[in-house]
Length: 254
Image (cartoon, rainbow, N blue to C red):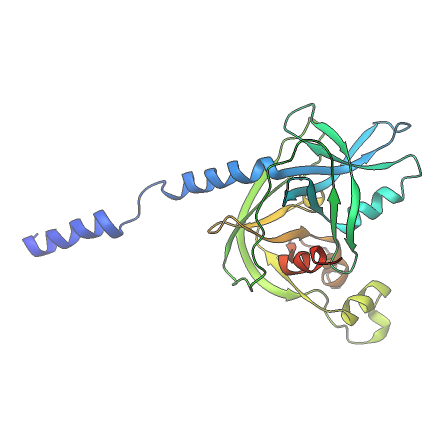
């Protein structure tokens, strides 16, 4: 190799060449930052067996006493009888602390809810400003995909925003529409479709931009499957998230 070519190769290797494992510490650091802010959301029932049930995920924002989750989680607690109360599970391991929660804001249209909890503040995540997200953005989300059978152990998945899609798909005739689909078509909005697989317990998980470390959305499957995947004979494992701009709108309510 001539000296000019050798010099060029050294510059590429030193300045522009990829370093093995360079991305892994950054993602690991981000997981360490996100994980403490992620909480479980469920119910407490003194007459139930078990007494506590974790149904979904949430995450802390702001002063650490404010928790974001899905509206359908809150509505589900209300169907469990007058003895059932909404609670948030904080911590990690087999014995998380259980805190009562009150609903500050509820938005069934976008399936978002904002809760308030007492006690020591939970480490909080930062919300993105709501600007449009590009398809191909690298994301991660942390939550409780299979609940808390063995305790509170958050799980992280990673992927990309694979598409930005409408909440509902128009049908060829009105006869094919359900009441839920008609409502979605009357109040249409776009949501993020992800290439990472989530499960029912992931509802309410924060969708985090890997570059900025900010929350760009809230995971949700209920609305999307009612509006989009009902056209499929066999529902897929596609994951969806509500854009964070709708959370900003909810937080701005007085």
